[in-house]
Image 1 (spheres, rainbow, N blue to C red):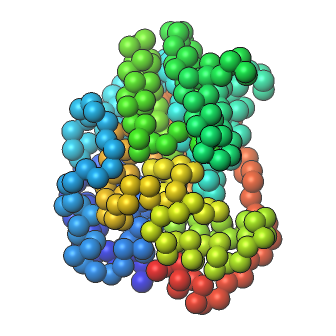
Image 2 (image 1 turned 90 degrees about the horizontal axis):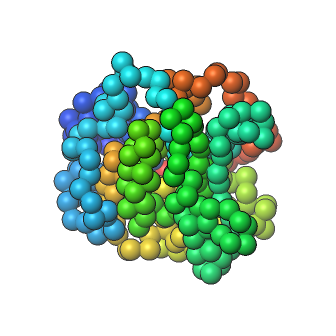
Image 3 (image 1 turned 180 degrees about the horizontal axis):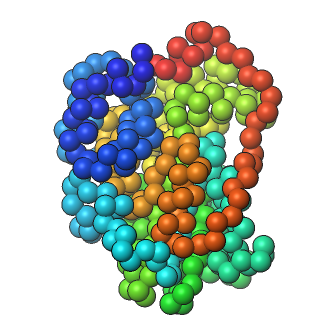
Length: 322
């Protein structure tokens, strides 16, 4: 069954919380669409996605600027578009087509003849390495001689745009929400705009896409994906879109919360901080960003695609749905 059939009660309940039809559909497809496969067909379980109110995950100490049911796109005054200056903050979830977006954003950077300053810092490592990567992304590094986001959001000119690319271990959103508030406020206090954006992908397609990394890790399909997803919390080779969005490359569930709470927290972060949320639609992403920034339209070329054939058994697909 499709997610809409398996989670029909959730679908209709959730619809009432979003007045903007297009944003509602994007959020449904990008987050609930894949989580419902894991929640199962229990109506009580799916309904609890919306009614659970306990804050088991870390939340920002500040009051959200937008009210419940309001998305950032609904706050946009289209008569004032395009904005004259600001910062585009791209949160890159792996295997969602994010490399294509990142390469497209780089076309506007000075190295390719553009005028949009570009910043990124990400990588892999153990616990100590991850802390250094995140520290460098946030506050900069003396070794590299580069400032981090704390510096990058400062001194934006009245007609200047900048782009920040957040990827592996750059930032763990669940416990770093206060930084998103701080960076947005700093940019807006300069009379400019902070544009948070993220791309998701249809859940089964995302899961199948990750299988192509099995040979890289000398693993098997069962160990690489199925067994990993059946565990409550551990660090595996890959992460679901929900896990990466919340925890980046940390373990799957560092706080030991249930699936419903993870979904609630993800929707909370999306509503508060992300102006553009798309699901596997690069053209829609490009059009939305160009509308806000007024940038010259540049061709978006697909990158990091997998051209080989992949085969799966019926049982493997059923296991992924579970």
